[in-house]
Length: 169
Image (tube, rainbow, N blue to C red; front, top):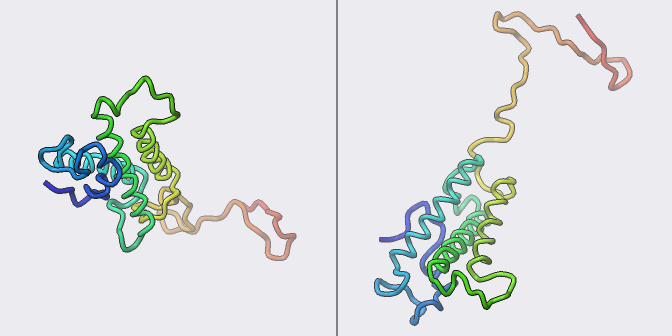
């Protein structure tokens, strides 16, 4: 199995982040987690990211050539999210009552994924938009359905004080 076409992260990036949980720092079919499990987690987190992008009007998948910075941010979020989920599957990494630090490693990685998701919600990433924010704004037409010209309710007089409005019939 390999990561899907809609996945931003890679097994090599996960090995860089959490490779210390296996002796060789390299995932394989005999390690826990296996390479297949790492790839499945990358795909699952990428699906979450893509669903979030789609729900907020972005095109899925972020094009590498068109938006390299947004793609890199999505890659980092994908890697951090998958690393957090994989670390949480290991009992000693999931919860240690003796540790009183502010954050565990899985929490830190999960927060980085959540931070990217918030940027998507606030439209703070520069990536292709499927919908423009003003697509649903409706404006009046100069002519009605019968082809007759609509008379404007408010107009500006050309030679009057700027900003003054007059009511016409």
